[in-house]
Amino acid sequence: MTVRVLTGITTTGTPHLGNYAGAIRPAIAASRAPGVESFFFLADYHALIKADDPQRVARSRLEIAATWLACGLDPHKVTFYRQSDIVEIPQLTWLLTCVAAKGLLNRAHAYKAAVDRNREVGEDPDFGVTAGLYMYPVLMAADILAFGAHKVPVGRDQIQHIEMARDIGQRFNHLYGDAWRAATGGQGEPLVLPEVQIDENVATLPGLDGRKMSKSYDNTIALFASPAELKKQVMSIVTDSRAPGEPKDTEGSALFQLYQAFATAQQAQEMRHAFADGIGWGDAKQRLFAVVDETVAPMRERYAQLIARPAHLEDILLDGARKARDVTTPLLDGLQRAVGLGPFIAPAVPAGPVQPASARLPQIKQYREADGRFHFKLVDAEGRLLLQGDGVESPRQAGQLIARLKREGADALHALEQRAVGLAGERIGVLGEDVAGVDVLVDALRAMAEGAG
Ligand code: TRP
Image (cartoon, rainbow, N blue to C red):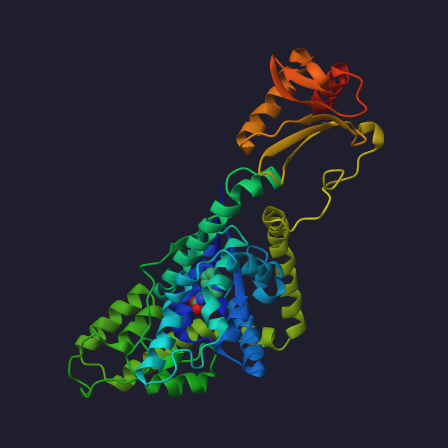
């Protein structure tokens, strides 16, 4: 079985070296492994929660799309799309909103932090808190559950969100699982509960000031800065005051960690020796610039080409959206029916190519009544009722009964009083109004068995 891996990238800000080494590079490498089916998307609805400047959102979306492609993401191998192109995501968000416990959302870190900050400064706790921030985990759950993702690689700060997606998905399964199985004939559960995947080996890169590289610390080095800008930023990395000739520690050195993230193992080893031998900081930075630029230069060129052709990027993402919706459209169709939002009438002919009348067969249909019991009926090729089954407790019982009817019905069906029908001595339903007798049912079952064989 292939493992379905899915992850989203919030489209705020401009990608930096930390994003590259910590997320983009390992994700692209993982997407090339055999046996995985990867879904990558631009979480642009999530971006609206953090940013209300339309131009920045639009710009960042374009930059991030071009970045992932320039770094080697292959849109033929993976499914790469924009969240906002998948209408089933907001649909599922609402279905999940209606089962998510408010108390669960109250505990979300990001929301709680905003409330705590307000309390600290004596503000109203809800000051500046949008319902979007509050609902963030539900939207993220919909992103994941709409695709039946098994694994979600994310940073540690996102673990709680994956746990919430599992909680909410489990609650949906519990409430609507039976209805979903009855409505769709599906087996198992409607929603797959995802697992978080944390890569322990992935480096978090330090930024210019030695703290974790992050746009919230304003200490980032842009991934696709011009060579001159990149050099300037590398030269501004904070170091200690040791002079050239004095031995230097690689341990705890931001400069060394950055170097290691871009150098080969052998280069890193040489740099260790250079540190011990007292390389000057200026020289060390020069070497760092050289390895980073060597890695980035070909990608920078591809990036410039991509960003200059937004229509081409648009095509790639719309293609991705089509592939993505091949998964989400049927899933949402089943979920809508499970919650009671299906069409008023079941389609007369099962979906798929329309068959000529002569090729149509009698059918057994299974459904759930308002009384909560599970029913079936046998209809002829034109849809006329032949046998109305009695309701049973569970979809499982209904399934077993139908299987027996198909297997033994032709030999073991018999008439009971008042147009009731028995199967090997046990009442299972009543004849349809215009049906002369049990023989009609037997013929229909035989026709079905032949048609299936
Ligand atoms: N919240 C994630 C982040 O900030 C981005 C994201 C949105 C995501 N939807 C997702 C990640 C679904 C994984 C799966 O990093």
